[in-house]
Length: 332
Image 1: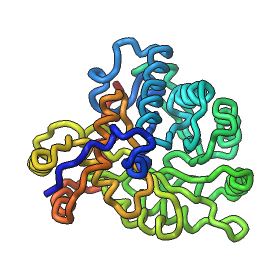
Image 2: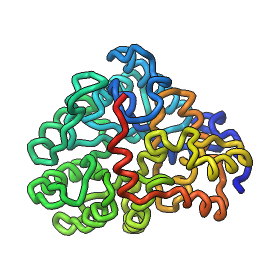
Image 3: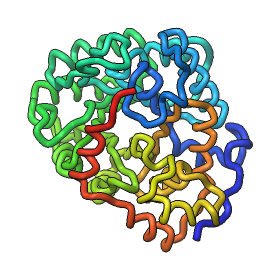
């Protein structure tokens, strides 16, 4: 079973845990807007989810993450005002070593409401790229390091539109890494299609962000191929929108014994499983409280034996089952 983890968050950004902590990034999907599909938001966020309150929460998380040694932050145009909050925080002080990534391809349409007919609209057209890159540049300036096509599926025009490919290649030539994120039960197919794309003989996509977790590990082999081909691999939704961070009758027989022997909570175990994948360069935390982030960072000190990983693999679901369940999670 897993060894007892040591405290990996108290050493500060210059302590011995720095290298491990820097494999954790902070994602802002859940704090840039009042509504999202993660479980437990009514418990974790204040009743007042006005712009000012969510700005304070985002800045608190960013302060805590940076002080703890985290050096990667991920956002998107569709995460409400997350880019705005991040840009304000970046402008408030020197943040050396921080890697900033964002995504384009969804437009936020919820008008700062928790419940809306449509929270975001997907469009991978050249026109949307041009508009959203300008918006991102206005909010993040020259701090943008990685720009990703948001939520690519095998039928996305982002995989076939050669005019868009030229636009993206021009961005890469200007010094911004171009990547994509994927979603849905056919992630592996989308990843492999993206790996094959070139412009003037050069790979177009240098980074891949995908959902991988103990319930939905199906993208793993394709992510290993991406890593072996020199792409940066980023894991999102490692906690399955909170499903892997709370007691559950189906999960408890597998996770509870590991928690008992290791002292690590469920969230740290699930993130540690992602960190143990040899192809995972960065694993995102979607924490919405500093306490959650502190708990998430404990994953960097959890050591899982091969037998532990084998037991954890029993939690996987068919991709279609997982993504159907995710699509039914309520915004709250």
